[in-house]
Length: 142
Image 1 (spheres, helix red, strand yellow):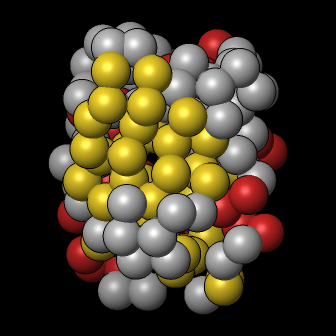
Image 2: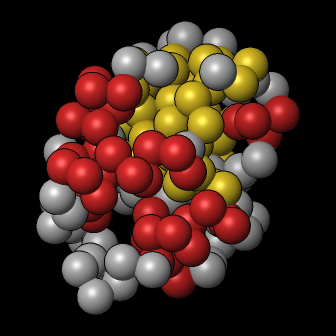
């Protein structure tokens, strides 16, 4: 993992914008980097959110309210549903070979511990729907 690129990507996310460089660097240890091929399931509508996923390279496709949309490098899925411990509103799949940072539910508590510095990111970003464990099961960990 190129830690500088990954940290810069995290700092660019609306949900982590309030964090300093050192805080973002410390969060990196809570992510796994995975590479997935096209068509891999990332989230299923109506299923519990189990992962927060950040796109480092490639793209995802979200299908659900408000319609189809592309989730590109520098964007994330899963923040809102993970924050509220809810279910995904959309189905998300990889649109092309992608490199992702994936944070599971237990690791997400590290982010919640910074609650005083962060607000739940409702409506703060383009695409944040929950991801499923299928990302890690169908991927190679790095």
